[in-house]
Amino acid sequence: MSLKAFHIIFVAVSTLLFVFFGTWSLNQYRTVDSSEMNLAYIIISLAGLCVLPVYGWYFLKKLKHVSFL
Image (cartoon, rainbow, N blue to C red):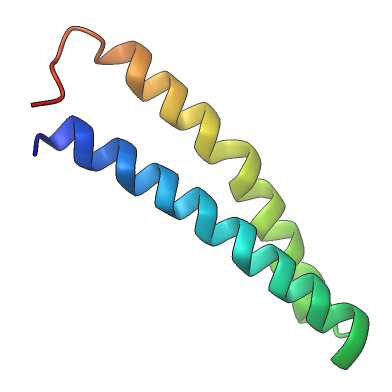
């Protein structure tokens, strides 16, 4: 597996982790504890969800000449 393929998989898994963490934090904020920390976690998750796909697209565009093998 090349570094490019590993990088794309890592960005995809990290994005899914932000989805899970954001939904979990939102559920905690709504039901269990309405603390500022859970709100900060939600904001961080939303920021990660916005930044990581853009970074992945930029990375693919930059290394389009490198193969996935």
